Length: 172
Image (tube, rainbow, N blue to C red):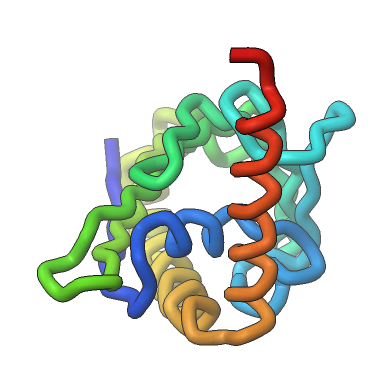
């Protein structure tokens, strides 16, 4: 199964790096060049395990994905529930680890996929790897720029504060 990966280091601590990655529209559109439209589905208001997301890419392709893991500030994982006909399977994981320097984060994004039909898979997987590799590199570069954008950072900090407030009001 093909895998594409991109790694970058951003000048914010892991908690904030994770929060930037989970920003929603319209803030998301400031940094994510891949997404043309994205929203949570089924009445969800915050990302989390089991939550589904509708995404329309810059290519016009639509995918509904589901969070299969959500562990701030270290990682998030998703799988395709419904998507373009040529993907038999698509999944992704984003990891956030403290960098050697303080208040910096090493960010690793990894996507795995399998194309169909099986007869064309040897060629389709190579082409898909090239295309997805190009997109993931552009996307993580946009994300890194978002980690320096004052508007994006303010929204991410607000989401962190709201998350802290929500957790402190939950019965313990």
